[in-house]
Image 1 (spheres, rainbow, N blue to C red):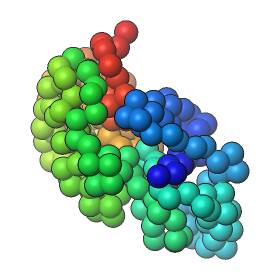
Image 2 (cartoon, rainbow, N blue to C red):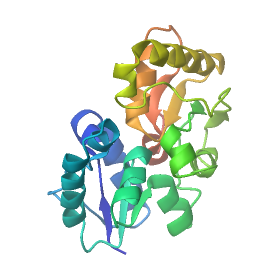
Image 3 (cartoon, helix red, strand yellow):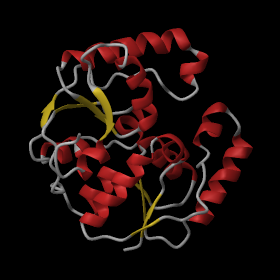
Length: 226
């Protein structure tokens, strides 16, 4: 199986550790992961903002960059949802690849911390990831998974929604951060760094609140982080 990593532009620019963790994890499980150098933005942001023509151009470039690969994996539920809706690429969010394609639920990770999980909107509603990420996290040695109150509620990011509707977005963020803080968890995990960046900004203003972390980083961990 020829697995290719679609790291996404956001992760590449701001959160490369999510892509590194994805590759580290898959290589530990015995797989080879390619990184097509021609990859760029998938066009999601453009499409969501109404720029259909530029979005289509980026979608075609993405299809060309990943042509010939059996499976494409990405640590971004929102970008995978966009690729599925607008391209013919065999794209999978990380938990889908692990559970559905590779048949793995215990990846041999160790992360001795209290963790709560936020199911992002694209993962929850577009991809219908269901319990896959939580199943993987429950199998991590030393990890205590704590339920997040009102997990289905949006964090308020929504891409450009947070810019165009700042007041509403801020109110939604406040609710999400209050629920996260109420868990007493050390970390808040999710499958999209865009949402984690938004939530993390709110949590950073709450002393003792959970730290944001992409769940791929937890699955790639083999011991206590520094």
